[in-house]
Length: 320
Image 1 (tube, rainbow, N blue to C red):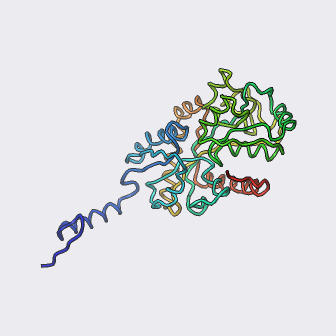
Image 2 (image 1 turned 120 degrees about the vertical axis):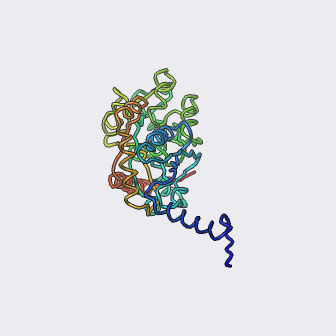
Image 3 (image 1 turned 90 degrees about the horizontal axis):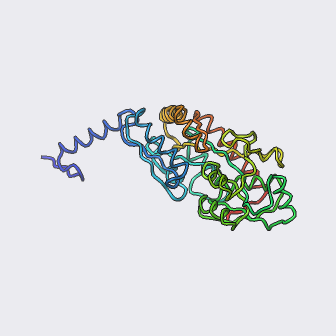
């Protein structure tokens, strides 16, 4: 009698059961188990949007969705994950721009595939109230008169606050000194405390401080005025023509994930983000819900990479 000894299946009958189960699970249509979304720290806008998706996506796909928060970039984890649609990423521009500042373990174009845009924020230019500045023109004049003396705060390299300011410096030819902090929240606190004088960041998290007078908002970074911050002029119209910085966060899957799986995720996630109640809830927090096809989001990522490759080459921006 033939005896088969396999971990988890001690007898031939058990082995056949295991093989049968594995084959049937593999043959089942996607998804047949839980999906995880990797994103940034708990309480961030990324986390909030990821949890909205995790709440409603099971209604569409019939499987649980869990959110996994990571203190650092999670793109390398998703890039190495099995390309089966069970591990996806919700993150912003640092995913596709950071590898052009320094060597990373993944290539955003080779190792990740775009699924859908998720949301954008109104990125605003802020100054400490002690600074005698009420417009972009005022800020530029002061920075020109005091080269290298004005400090700006930024968190993670290649995250929104850093990139928005680097584009501002690139186009204005001004010398502002960067002070690094371990994330956007400490960078905002530094501005409120007067440790630095200026920064860019998302409006949603700082408008209460603006309204209380602890910081002053002078412009919005987008090319057109934003309904998310009504009444605030653009950087372009108030001192730096042509300036346009839009913060877009999106969903990625590992490269080689089946096209049908990517299309399914894109379609269902976009439908959630376009629900009127979700759109309104995010709008009230200074966030514009998006949702797109994989091709649309992929084209945006590639265009952004091309733009930042040129800026990095022209300026020689270094990572500290």
